[in-house]
Image (cartoon, rainbow, N blue to C red):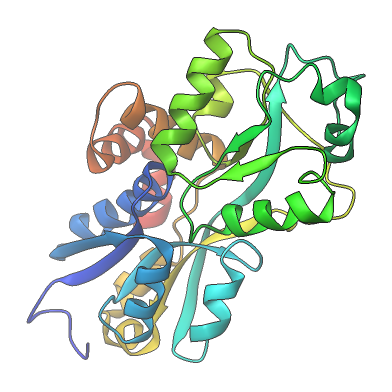
Length: 271
């Protein structure tokens, strides 16, 4: 990509709603700057190679340095970090708030017989196989000896996680769920993260807009300046994510709705 005029800017994103809305903010900014935008989305293992080959010009959002670190290390010589869109992206396992904290507050507690006996299920419903959360969750099952205590981690997708959390909380079940921030479920339900004393999950990440280096060089200077000023918070992503999952908006509509409620923030980006 040596010039933005002959064709659209190709913006990549992960096909999960919290990633989609973060990328949609970038999409709307580009549209307001007069660019044509083509959005491509898919799972983690598909999108990062597309970015490396230059088939994606921009990608939002990469969780760095930990969450998406495995993918980033494979392509870092061909890409550049444009701006951290927000801080505080993180993974964890959680239990409902009605599970007493004095009984379950950390991952090692899950191996105690008095805890496993109280659990409605020892199956932990996970998300997609290529997600950073999934890879770390499979590691922690072994690291903490949860498999020996009867726990198992099941591959699924975002919708399986959302459905499981909703159904089990409605039934007041004792259960454990892999979770992350940003994710609208954290605003809807009382879910308590479990301490991870062995540090299987990485420290909180920055969630960044990244670019193939040739594509970034081909963007107009003002566009690069504006992109470098985009900044929002985990709470903003949760709000947009909720608009998609609870109100039925598409990601771009959710982003536009949030941006309409945050005119001062948006003006600070556009200059």
